[in-house]
Image 1 (cartoon, rainbow, N blue to C red):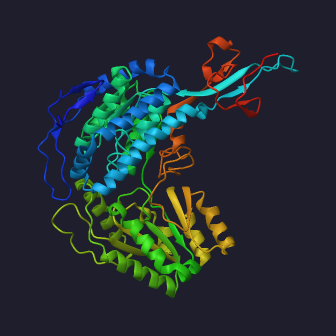
Image 2: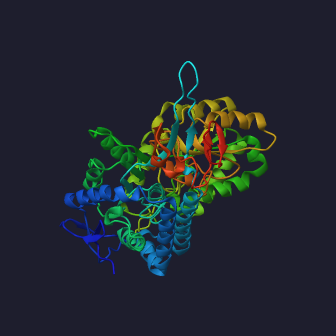
Length: 531
């Protein structure tokens, strides 16, 4: 049974009197359970206990952390249909989507377990001493990555499992050896409580100290701000809006001791379609684009929100076809009232610029549930360059075409782009010069480049980069998806002339972990043999 309480260092707590409820987005019916906003005292206790737990967790072996992550995955799977039913009631995402997301959640936990067992994530680098080097001897220097400390993770609205309580940020922080305090998203608090119970059960199985994990509820800005301001917090992981991410970033920067905020925020994910690609594959591209824009009712951070084409008869027919296909889609259900409110405001702002043409009919959405009609805008390259607000993210089933009189004008328009998570090019194989020029420009604007595909759908693997230049993220050198996400919650440390017995195992001469290391510039797993 859902309690509505906060999980604070192993104990379920409800100290405050501020409450909220979850809402079924399809019916707007409120749940019967009251969820308690975390108090300042509960937040303080959660972080203090996390700092205490860190003293144990930072010393745990990679193998122990791997087993713990696998236990979390097992416990989530044990929740069975109850988890899917709860998540569906709170998000309206549907059973198939949520079952797939659960699989992604457990898979990424197990993937990080594999990373830990392989061991090279610590990036061990050794420069052995050269005592007879002239004019100055070289000391023995050994470098590796170590965990940062307590991490705050903010759950995302659009992924109640994969980017929430036990999602990628939490998995990568645990893998790094960091305790985690989750600020659950108020759109799916019951789902968050169920997953928190699974994480707690896994931690108890492995004898972790109570502060290893806490889950705080709250539908107010105060809860998140107070958490980030806590002096013992060391880092923040966030997925959400530009406004929300920037607020947390600014809060962290104002602290007497600033901390990193790894925030994934707004992205419009530009798509460029060459005239030749339109001529050869126009219908297929139109269908794929519409599927990508409307997937999850457009509530994906990788949704293609801008489409660049060279203005001619073929491209105008293409825009008309996309608008036709979009109009055939019934208004889907948005996640919650806040998403509907912000989307409505963004669309109204775009209309108010007077610089767009609207192709699809914008009838009032149905009264049942939080719905918004599919919408297609069009603007010119000239207007796009002049008005940066045309790059506003529309978090829903909305996209905008940018028509360019010439290829050169298209290149110029791309230079005006802000930072994005993705950029996509549709072109033919023989258009090497054109495509190369596009990639050359777009690589400065995005974290992932896609050719002849669509950006929605992010593979969780070793090579994935899910990040990008600001405002897509606050830290473009990092990713929130894939195994290198662990590096966000690690920091480098170097040991100079330290006796072997005092070194971490990853840096010891014998290489007892049998991991790959860079020794005197060479990648090797061989032990060191001192002369």
